[in-house]
Image (cartoon, rainbow over the protein chains, first blue to last red):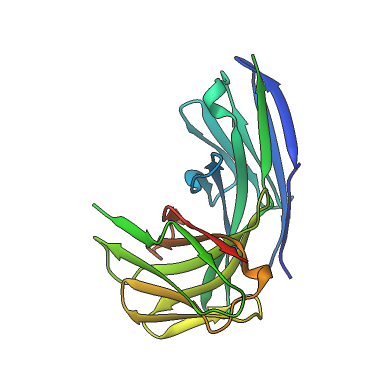
Length: 112
Length: 113
């Protein structure tokens, strides 16, 4: 089967750096992505990693290690508006169908 | 540019009543389409996905069904709603070309009473 593990909650201080980890187990894996969701809203795409290494997009970076089945989202210079839930998601190809499965999400609390 | 429309935004239905949620995508062709459900404070559960017209894959056995009558239209249905069907339903699409960026609709908050 498929499974993703990420912490349920993380707390950090405004202006600091926080890392949200994600480990996954799936067959047919070909990519890991991250989404942000504010309360009452729909998830929005942040980043996607298909290859090992770090992808940087502004204050957000995402890392993938395929050999370790592990990735993380790094948020720098935290702002209050970054308070949200963050989901990792794996893309897999099974039986010629590709699908995207989400983790349970990490609630990020930011303190002033 | 591509847009996704999902309606209604909010729905309150009695137990045992039918359900029909509709989602349409504009500005792209042959997208992969998805239905997810999110319980309050929880993760996104994949319900159905479709790689083409009439092609539906179900992830979770339940009293829900999905159909894709047109390339850019995805419908979630139920003949008889259960209390456990309450939740936030999200339609999404991606291009299916490997960039794996999902675009979500604004969601439907369904309350079954």
